[in-house]
Length: 283
Figure (cartoon, rainbow, N blue to C red):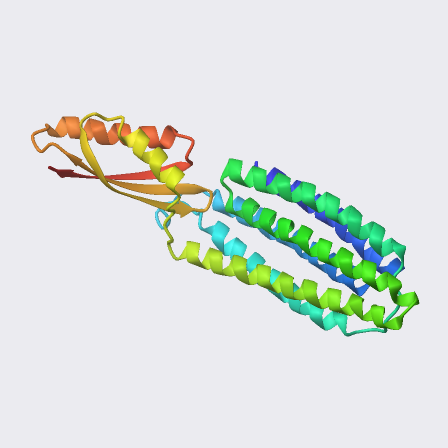
């Protein structure tokens, strides 16, 4: 399912990139060119995302008993570096060529891009949350920020359209391109830090998820209390460790049944839990 969403995103970004590149050529807008390059980054990250999504769904093996879900984080890190490098490339491109007056084609193109990108980002984030896919959420966030970038580009394009009346307005096109470049690099750095933290083993402390796990575990009346719940994310799924306290007088067979039921209940839940470890201690 993740792959189908990524393919749709790729096709949309491919069409948008072509439209923006053509629009920048006809309108002589450096800002629109920068926006087109940024859209090209979205298209490229879709390709990387498709590869990462396919690899992360590989079955567990002897060397990777918890599966290959963390490949999603490596993929997202590659996406981050790609975004940063494209941002630097936009800065370099900004100072090449001569200043020319932007025309109405740039305005029309950027408005089309904003509308399409907003629809795409909303779709990606919604699918990412429903499928619990780090790759889709990462790409959805990047597309969402791209909408904000395009709004800024729209402002600078509007100002640069006045260049035919006053040459000083021509510099708005350069400033717009530089601003978009800095924002692009900032997004890349933010995504990089987030995914590095995840790949190092950051625990998920979201209250709604922890409370949902507690509710499932507490259905077992033989449990005295829950000592601790540790939730680790492995890409699109979770591994959870539950520490519980039970009566020391319980027979071993009953303790085993409680452990088995907790594992089955958590895996059957809608929390995307694939691996469960239950640590039991007596009162």
